[in-house]
Every structure is written in structure tokens, then in C-alpha cells.
Length: 118
Length: 108
Image (cartoon, rainbow over all chains, first blue to last red):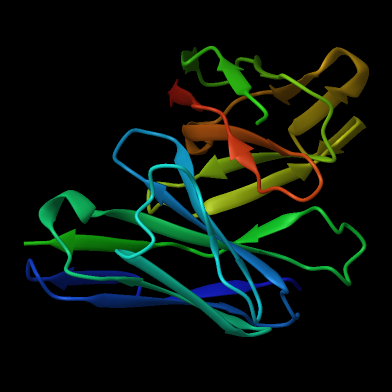
């Protein structure tokens, strides 16, 4: 149980275009989801917290107009990278909390999306 | 926010050796998780261990919440254990904050 999927797993786009990444909780309802970014040989950095039906909360230094997050349902959160530039190339990973699970603070992670901007 | 520090940053072992990875955190936590990141980037959840001791095969973990540290033990290491190990901690109402990781290399 507690499976999180991401789509696509890998995407290449041209500079200036926008890319949407989907994060789904497959077998539970997630009121809270999180988006992380990981650069090569670095750790995961929290970008934003996404709560169903409300605006996302962004970490300091993360541009909310560039990284649009929408948590429209209890099983889906999307991250849209707008006007992508090569420096946005990174590994994006989402995670979710299962509030009805036995471990309410355990985060379940998706497999990640590798974005390359050319 | 909470700070998470891992040591050592790199660890090189011969197959069959044992190892201990350490994670220190700066405040009380509601959750601590250990992960292994595979070569494709997937985070494999090893332990959910805000306190106490757990074992899963050759891996075990101990968290001493009162002293704000956790240890991951790997016994009889195998080449397939190679990769990056992360610990991450959170306080209620926040997200997991990750340490910088320990890169483990096991050679045959």
C-alpha cells in the first residue's frame, strides 16, 4: 500500500517552454503532498508543500510564479515549470502523507522525474 | 527549521564488512526515515523510526530521540548495498528535511 506515482519519468524540453509533472497517490488520499528538487550529487531540497484545495506554500528562494503547484484533488498534485531554462534541469521528486494510515507522519515518495532543458 | 547532519559523507568497504551510518538532528522530531537512493534516483524507504530499534534482514536502525541521533547498521555488506543513504526528519506540520547523505561503495 501507500504507492505514489509520477509522470513523466523523464522529459526533455526546449528553453522557454513549460512542462507539467504529475504526482498521484494510487491507493490512498493525500491531503498533503510535497515537492523536492535534487541536483546531481546533492541532497533533496524541499521546494513546496501542497495542500488539497488551497494554495501551495513555497520554501524561501523558490519562485512561485515559475514553479506552479496545483493540488486539485486528494490524489493528484501537479508541478508546472514555466518558461523553463537550462538551470531548471534537475530531478524532481514528490511525496505524500497518508493521514489515515497507521503512521501519519510517514512520507511516501514517487519515483521522480528527470527534467532536461535544452 | 530542523537541521539534519549525516556522517560520514563517504564510506568505502570490502564486501562482507559491517558499517554504521550516523544521523544527528537539531530538535525533537515526530518522524525519522532512512532511505537508500538507487542508481535511477528512486528513494527506497528503509525504516520509519522516530524512536527505538528496528531490524530488517541485514539492516537495522536505532533512534535515540532524547539524544537526537539515529544510527543505521549494515551487516555483511554486499556490492548491491552501494549507493547513497539519506536520513530525513520532520516535526509535526512540516515536511521531511534531508541530510546530505552518505555515499557507500562496497567492492568485491
